[in-house]
Image 1 (cartoon, chains in turn blue, green):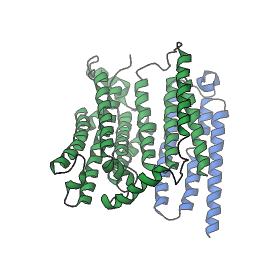
Image 2 (tube, chains in turn purple, blue; image 1 turned 135 degrees about the vertical axis):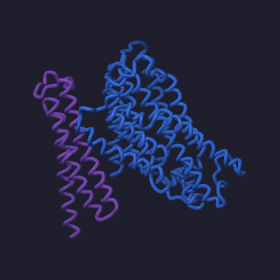
Image 3 (tube, one colour; image 1 turned 60 degrees about the vertical axis):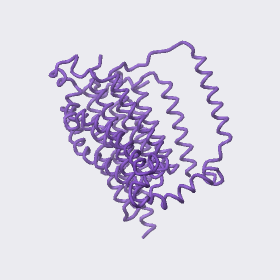
Image 4 (cartoon, chains in turn yellow, orange; image 1 turned 90 degrees about the horizontal axis):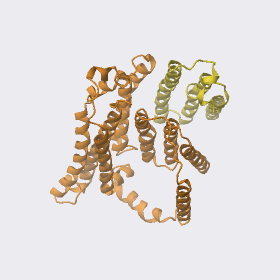
Length: 107
Length: 329
């Protein structure tokens, strides 16, 4: 039973880590602002769910697990909101999706 | 494993510092200082200094970034290029670096059990704190009681900084602009047209403030205390100011209340010290505050942490409002 939980937790941690890696890679390599932000938003939506669930399995039924749950709820509220606010203000300030020529962060 | 993490974080820290120096875009530099503070907080955390890590994350990565952005909104985004005397400053930096590296050669290895600090200073505090003060968090006992003078000094550094910023920046509110023009400016408006951040932010503000109070009153039992609590409560109110507009935040916590917090906090700390003298002890000796010396110590620490929390929260909010009240030129 313990080893099953361990294996499940490690699977969650590894997949979560892979999502962080892919998100970081995408944020570096994708061509323009919105696609890069889309990649980066993986690291604050799916990745914390998987990683914190993995750590919660390691923590077992304890106060630590409840704290991790609170952190997860906080991250799930703030992360996507921050991504939304960033994309929204980029759009409002006139950056068109798919238009990599106006992208000043390229260099 | 911890060594690996430490080397990784310190390498990132050096890279971030070099990037901060090299960039001439001040916005990028501000974001990088935030990252620098967060890396520093992680570093403190793997060294088991949870209290310091919390302070660094709350003040360095959180509030300072907001204050820098507030200042940046009033000035240009790009650094003025300076050309003269580059070799002189390079020389000074290189000499200082070499001296510092030479000084580290005498330092004991990190975590060396034979280091003087682990033989004389730390064991004394660890042994005596349960007996003399009776609270679980030794860091709070050291900061609040054994080194009460240090913390008193830190509090007055913040107090002085707040007064300095207010002297330079404030006193202009409403002088150049009629009140309705103020209300139409973007800072006064808040995020009225951004529904999602506004809803989520409103949801979060009470929890952030509650967490601040938790840190304030839990500082004797776990990581936390006045500095962290003041910064986090201030962060919650700054978030409110960003969402609802600065004038709405000033209606909730008016400028006079902020001043009362800054002055009252500093006075409270000083008064606890004077009370010690009046009751026959030394300045900032809390043992005489109650019949039982241990109870007196706990009472004193609670009172001075409250003073620190009030002063830090009031000072950070006053500085924020001082920046936010000025129109960019």
